[in-house]
Image 1 (cartoon, rainbow, N blue to C red):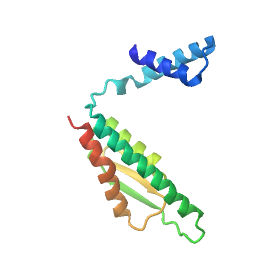
Image 2 (cartoon, helix red, strand yellow):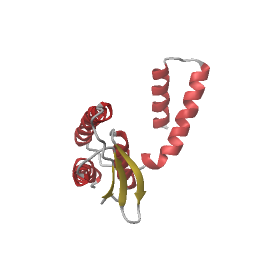
Image 3 (tube, helix red, strand yellow):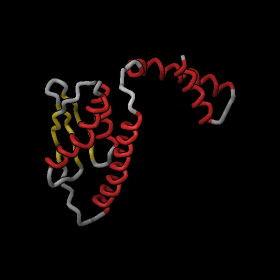
Image 4 (cartoon, rainbow, N blue to C red):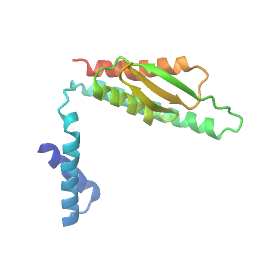
Length: 154
């Protein structure tokens, strides 16, 4: 119930409207979000706020840097894009860790998760432009997968 009330309060503050419609829609949305995210809320993620903060700062830095890289690649008329599809073998067993890993790949400009093959433990990634797919593979594993393994370790 705490999460519903918290989400509802955040909803009201962000909207800045305290009408009956805002109260009702916020409460309905808070209940729906809580109901559908319940499996994730019961997940036992070790609480390591400093490590999580450092990890998200690193991801944020990568997003900003990738924005400039992609803009340069797209806007430069002499730049020849070399797209690639890379199969990233993963050792992430936790579903939430894998979801976060794939989400990071999706939000970093220039990369996109195309498919997750749980049977063969592969994440298929499309890269906008690269000369060395192996370097991208190693970067994904060292910058995102390895820290996630450490963050989700018991």
